Length: 278
Image 1 (tube, one colour):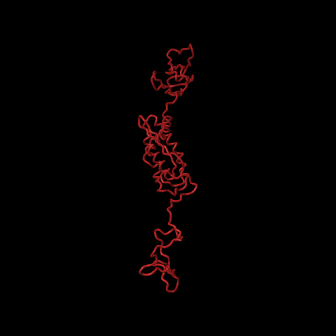
Image 2 (cartoon, rainbow, N blue to C red):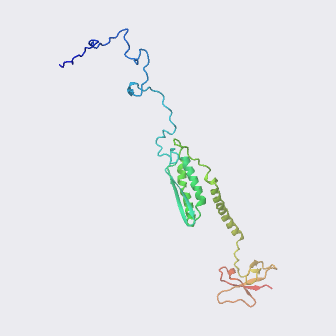
Image 3 (cartoon, helix red, strand yellow):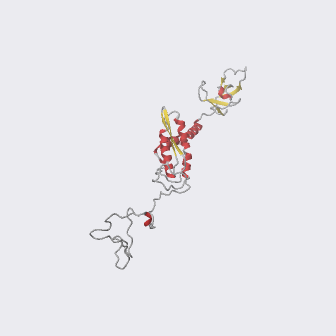
């Protein structure tokens, strides 16, 4: 056992008494100025207090925004606004630039409103930009027909919800936009003009010349180079000639007779002999 150094515990004030452990009692001093008094609440935890010393008290959570939890089972969200449901369709457009041309496409997915707005915008642009080229005249109608598939897919979707921004405004229907109206004017002219031309042609078409038969009487309202023979009653004063013979190979008309135009023969080759009545 080590011996304490000389003078340990000795001094002008006498030896140090052994350390006494204070006993609790009615007049015992509190352990320290920061001790917790009976019946008081514990002080709030300091920045270095252990987290487990003061467990968090349960309380109401802050409300979450509507787009924080998207609908389940709706597939990928819209590429424009993030709303669901969305259809994975591709909208196309075309530009004819006289010598060159451009094929445009914008793949989805799109929600109902954003898809409809994209379809109407690209189809409207194609209606007035897609005709300015020799091949574009045929490609533009094909492009517009292709866009009918995505349009039908967008119309089958439910109302969009759960996005990070509002959907696009679809705007006016395609047929109410100026490019569509410009296309409808020539389309209506073609739709109305073709039947009108057919009806006018039927009304003013030249009647087929009559096929003359032996014994009929006719009158000529034209000249002999451009005959216009009209069948007339033989008892009428207006009758000028009687069809006396239908010429065949090797036959000839009598002296003083006239020859009818072959168009009155029925086959474009047969001639008739016309005998003057006076």
